[in-house]
Length: 127
Length: 408
Image (cartoon, rainbow over all chains, first blue to last red; front, side, top):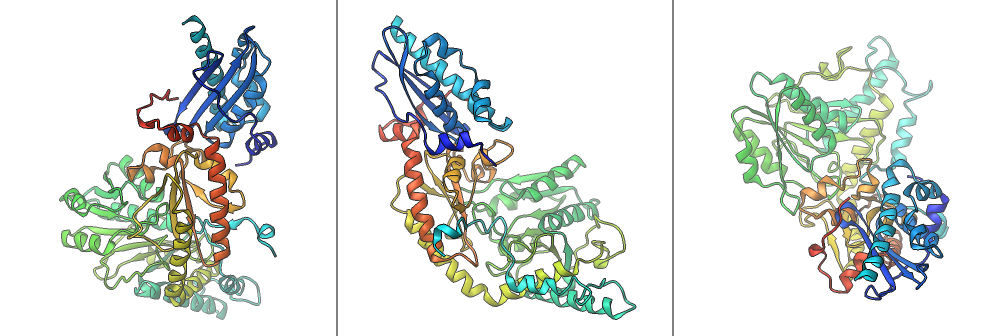
């Protein structure tokens, strides 16, 4: 299977790999996917008091397209408000990375990951 | 030439092999005007006679490797066609006797899909499980045999795991029950001993390109004593004693014959060399955490090693290993998005099936290739585990089997 240059770039030089303390109140964690399905994404966001995403980190178990989708996502969400980040669509990720149809589910997973991270952060605020 | 310049290293011999240069040379002598280009069915001139001689010689070479009579060899286009011809051929010929067939879940698709087709035609098929070792449970096989069972089809060596079934024992059982036994030997011919005088196999499929012959050619062994009948699937000029019509592809046949001749001569030395290389490869990984060998290495072909590197997804590992050519049981490398059905039949969890890599070594693999592979795999597995949330959880002591995953 041929990968696009952008997938290869993110795969070979993944951006923002790592973890934040998931118990930190300023951190939202989204973990989506399942090992049995061949991909698990963990996306974490660090949010300022003003509700702006200051930093983001990821770890992904999955194919090259899944790794690239989550790497790209960490770049995109930085500097966005929670509302803006929640509006990121999988189609934008798929388009940016030129994912073939069989890999579109990787971008769907990335969209799910940011939504889950925002939700996790919000649930901490209301708790 | 340094290693970097001649990459990638080919470690996918179970998928296909390059033709041996001796094979290619023989083939080239059967194509052009100054060579043996004739139609072996032409009885009226020397061009036909010479081509017929070449085919006869090749048939003897193929038969000799497996200790069969040359008259028991039927040329086909490859092991897939041989499997189709054997299974459908027997099913159609003996359908008055019964319509039940037994096979196994780890068979090649050429067998499984042929059986599925027969199910659509009204036959009944039992797909046996294997043990975690990859081996068939002989007792389960015996219990599956019914009065209307006409055929058992079990492969010799599994293409994904390299596990060797005890086809001598299966043959004894089948013969004692009066059931025809077909065996797909695409992955075993030329790698381990096959003696059809001793083994009670009735039909056996062979491939040219798995043993350094050309692609597009194979053979089906059809036993003469006791005589096994099959209904032809390809009709025409009545070639191959009516079992498979079509003008014989002399260059392909000569290539396959030469490949089988070389295999008979060199198999013992080559097997010992490949076994040593495989042990070297496995030793190179043995101190890594969370690796699992798939298939029982005590019943195994020498040149193949299937390993799951837990917490690393197979396709991403293959992507990282772009300087070596291997294959994976990961869903992402198949069109179906399902992980390997063979590894799942061995009881491997889906995640381990996703994390599997098949290394298959062959005639042109060197110690340097193996050492380079070990170094590269170790480095890339480490890198991908650093990227893996599962590895992080494992290291934190989380029991991954207890986590509620959001399946998608």
